[in-house]
Image (tube, rainbow, N blue to C red; front, side):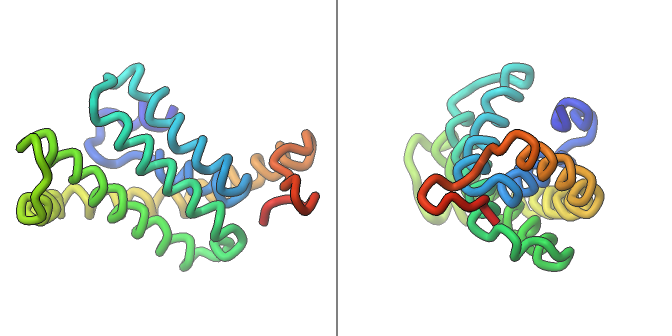
Length: 164
């Protein structure tokens, strides 16, 4: 829903922040699924295309990484660093798609050129991740923890413990 609400603001979206928070609270598998499905579901409105699998992979990896880091992202500074890393990582991986769509094949020099030309967009994206993480982490995190506790979902089967 956040991607729709902020559609008029280019590149300033809460999607990665929500995915990071979900991954942190629900674990890497649920984080990956949250990210991958966010791309598919929101692209029903924004348009599916050959870039969608790249978005699914990028946001899925962001969610899985947050799930693996778990409680290490409980404080604001590590959380903001994760948001910045997510913005940079997302941009770099999506620029692989950019090069493939422009050239039909991948070359490192075109990829570097795409990364450099995307720096302003990546900067805005990183700032939006930090802003949304700082604003949404506590309220959304409490709701996700409530869901996990109330319904007993996202418990690790191998240990019987909840993901950290």
